[in-house]
Length: 343
Image 1 (cartoon, rainbow, N blue to C red):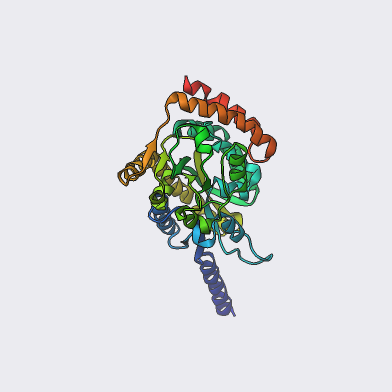
Image 2 (image 1 turned 90 degrees about the vertical axis):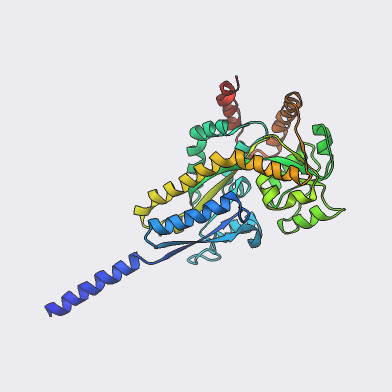
């Protein structure tokens, strides 16, 4: 009887160990274009997570565009029925997707034109307000593994322009991003913005009767090949475009807690490498676009000051029309926070 009991206990312990070490496959969608720095770093992190967890965690990466864009990615983070597994465990979203996922995080606040004009200002703001935004994302049921600046918003057009007024007349779209608030905010500011589904963006850009330009970041414009269909690009820093790597709490909690810190540290190292290389990466994209025949538009400091003043007036109009798009109090506090850095 004792031998049987001993055998039973041994088998129980062995089966428990097997269950605890069961392979966890994380299905992660990303907005990063193939072979871009973000794509390369994410694959490195996937390998590192597998090493950290002794092979227990495997990451499968999916392209967000092929899934239907960020809106589709958000839908796939949610189970079709209670008790079912969601199609995706996590995703890397731009600020557009993050806003759609967690509206009360007010992530758009960081992307208001001319509020933040370099990485040092962004780092300062995140050191003060980052935890507040992160806590709201966590409260919505997601673990924020990391977030970073993926580039600075710019305009890419087929037609030349010298002033902000001339730019506003050009028919524009958001490059591959479905965002009613972003496009409606630009419309309210006087821009000629049309809504183009992600799947039809490239077709509309190539068409003579389609759009005459778009706004995006240099990395997406170059790696996505969209620069081939435009003649002019704005080379200045209007605002940072943030990206966040989120994993559902349900999926994150499947991973043994002992691995969490090391996994986040691996992602933090990747984030730092990406941030440190961002200016060089942007400059490289600009050089390559210029070499292909794209003319860079570089407004003077005086011209940019006029742009900033006009955008500041528009900010109040946008907030009145879309009070939930960004946090006006945070916006004003950030202005005060970074004012000493510009003296």
